[in-house]
Image (cartoon, rainbow, N blue to C red; front, side):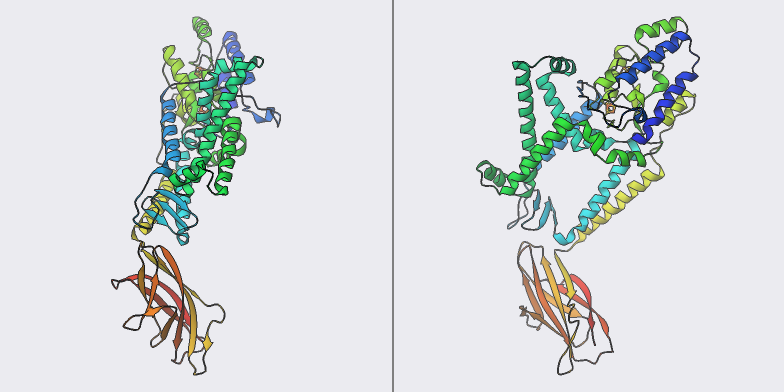
Length: 522
Ligand code: SF4
Ligand code: SF4
């Protein structure tokens, strides 16, 4: 089985073992294959068969080797784009006119607004966040249904920052071999100096990461000046300290352990995947039985088969989580594709076809093994469903954003008392009316209440226009609450509950917003 996850990890071992057992190998071939298999298991950095392992295993430090290739280039590009957005987006300006912040992306807690370029979200519109979360979850599910842990391998902040930290480490400590050898030497001035330089750089990146985070919560250039002159609010320094520590610890020290032990997504992902999803797979139909070039030549001399895998372990050396992908799916495999690049480079050197490790699935590998046809089905019930949910929720959000009014109205009926009977027999109901003005200028809204013929509408603390209608002035980008009293002298049915419509009219006489409530009687 190719789909990733611990639940699937046990499935691959019998598959590969069964495959080797079924082949009519001579003693020579069997010895070669078995020797290679045993070595692989012994040297594997992470356990694939958890039943045979103790429940606790000390961490083995991983020294990922540099690799070049298609997936590495893709990861570089995504690293530059994602980190570039994160670090520099707070400095992007967006003109919203006077009396409004000009930062493109801003979470304004004091002003209780979220600004995202031309979108401005008010606290009462937090349902957009719900929509955004649904779209994000469905996008994650869709990625998983198409090609496994795409999020983990290329976009997850843990992966991106770890990649950056590993790159810095490689610049300072050297590539895998050099770093490994130095770590085995006793401490020297050079070793200590390199380690100190590495940790200093890591801390600087971590500090910048924390610093960039707080810039999303205030005007970035102003906040930078305040931070530099120690005039920023203490909470800003607190968050920078917390994020500096977490970034340094998670990306510098914990790395793959976050993916293997802390993150819930690999477990959820394993439960959500199916047999059609593509995953980074070792194509054992091509690779087995593994044999070095020398052994392969010997096997061929005897007319025996040898696979394309020469057991050079380059795929393991480049793996940032220390997985041997040839042992089958593993919870530790974040599916970054770097082992594909490493193996492709080996195949190119020895003149064999590329993609011995590739995005594939076990169904296709078995089909090839049995001489059958492979099939790649991207359009399946689940992919269509996920895409449809994304389209519907995204479409509804886009529509409501495009058509929403620049003013809003909410009405809350008095809870106690629900009504008051006056000495002249008339009945009175009270309401708290909130009017939000999202314009950058003050607005005068005419308040109308319809549904109860002949009723008096009184607003406390507002003017009246020439027609005697209540006019409520609301400042720019503000909300105002007014108390509205509706009184009727008409006889009412016992326990009457009459629907009322509250409307606000803009200066041009258009209905800006409406809300409904009820007038209740004794
Ligand atoms: S890099 Fe390729 S050839 Fe080398 S061990 Fe890995 S799968 Fe085999
Ligand atoms: S096994 Fe390959 S795809 Fe998986 S994490 Fe390691 S290098 Fe990346």
